[in-house]
Image (tube, rainbow, N blue to C red):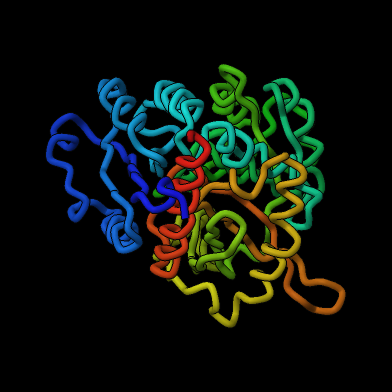
Length: 361
């Protein structure tokens, strides 16, 4: 074994906070304490790297001294984005530090456009991409025909922001008028169904197309009330599951007003060997993730150390088996996650850190 491999890998965990939080940061007090402990148990030197744009210089200097950086920062939150952070991470990665998730990988996997680009790998459904507001205005009415229900999703966002369930509110004759109305519901927690003109809804969507933004359109999945399964992966291997019985866009009970839809419930976590998820696990590992990698051109070592796929149940197959439809991939800030993912995360990042150190020799 070389000296480079014998030396303890140095790993930073990057998460948001202000200057005071950076000064007071302690691994044991972090929400990633279990990951810190697992890294130390494997002989690594693990350190917190609290990030804020105003602290970018300090964080850059810190990350240039480590072998690997695990980054947990949302892409859009509180009016802020990752422009400064992503430039910093590009620089650090170019200097030989392993970064997960790398900004280029986030752009490939972690935006809603991935639903369109990978619609044919086996986890897709009827999916369309609107690169402009005009393309949405032209195509949406036809896709809502005959009682169709669509789910529109902005290019980047989290927490249900910019995700809308849409269907016609009017009979066909009224739809031909300039005042045609739609029923819409935002997936943000606390939102209720509204009826408004198609023109007013399109005006709400206009900001999503700013600065190169776009929207993805998927067919609504009627089995959504049966729950959503989140599949957690470390690189290309499933590390656990989370099941949420009541999630965003869950409809109101039969006969109840539309504004009485229940609030999302808790996510229940399970290990990777949970029996009821084994069919999904095999499809994800054997078929869908390799096909996604080929489509997006992402090597296994470049896949995020921790990421997840959200699946809804699709229509039953001809033989009566469940199918699954991908509704989102989360890459930028996947937390919390099942306890079963902690050891695989630590193993993977230690391996990547040692490989990064060796490559700089």
